[in-house]
Amino acid sequence: MHASDLETASYGKLPDGREVKIFTMTNSKGMSAKVTEYGAILVGVIVPDAKGNKADVTLGYDDLAGWLGSKNYFGATVGRFGNRIADGKFTLDGKTYQLAKNNAPGGVPCHLHGGVKGFDKVLWSGKPVHKSGARGVQLTYVSKDGEEGYPGTLTTHVTYWLSDNNELTWEVDATTDKPTIVNLAHHSYWNLTGDPTKTILDHELQLNADSYLPTDKGLIPTGKIDPVNGTPMDFTKPTKVGAHVNDDFEALKFGGGYDHCWVLRKGTGLRTAAILKDPSSGRTMEVLTDQPGIQFYSGNFLDGSDVGKKGVKYQFRTGLCLETEGFPDAPNKPEFPSTVLRPGQTYRHTLVMKFTN
Ligand code: GLA
Image (tube, rainbow, N blue to C red; front, side):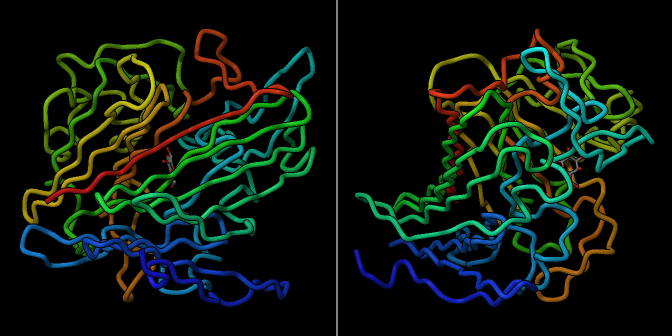
């Protein structure tokens, strides 16, 4: 391994003067990934297609100033609780906690992605790490007891690894000093064409899920688990994202397209959750995880107002997210897998994005 397969550089300064680093990982196949300490954000991923054409397959910005003004969580590590919590409220061990209500789909206020200043907007501390066949960046953030209204001091490590097999891994562990709730997620927007002026509607998606979580109009799960069979939510076989996204179906109306959590088939350890393919370039991304759910969001809130890399205005559905996670609103749904973390326990979450062409 060469020292140059992992470079560290300054990415500029935060308004408060703190310096922010950016790391570039490059593997032996010419794939590379950039990660910054700000928000533990995946800044970009360069992937070759079948003809060897390299392109960046994620949405984002060209510089730190862009990320500082980001509204869409491009590439971010979201937490402490990724996805939504109804009314921003939950009760743990008899005590009720009120979190920020920083989102209101359908006019219904809720807590989204960790609050006003979530993990996507804080400065992590990063360092290069190495293991056989991969190079990585480990980012650490200690969130104070009470930060964004959550109980407990939460110490979180996020490690991005780039292997020589074109696998990009996002790996998390977290520990707490008081009972709390945790549900981190990785929020990259993918456009495997490498040309974000194109929509993602021709991408083919397969989800290893026979059911999904229907929501109310505020995108909060009702608690029901519905089969996908016979509905536009069925991605058990590779299906174009655009094939049914505009169907007259309640879930799609509430989400303005796909914006739901699918219930992954049960199993132990890392398993395939999704396969995303862009037929035009041949680029394929397989998503593996150890989590119970995956939020598939078809970029329905992109409206051209966000100016990203190379000055591109990101239009409606030009990027999609596949957020592996615990279930949304789990803290208020005892029937869902628990997202409670207690002192002495370790929260773990692994997401692998494996690229082929
Ligand atoms: C998540 C949510 C979407 C949207 C995006 C960010 O994926 O499910 O509704 O809020 O984040 O814009």
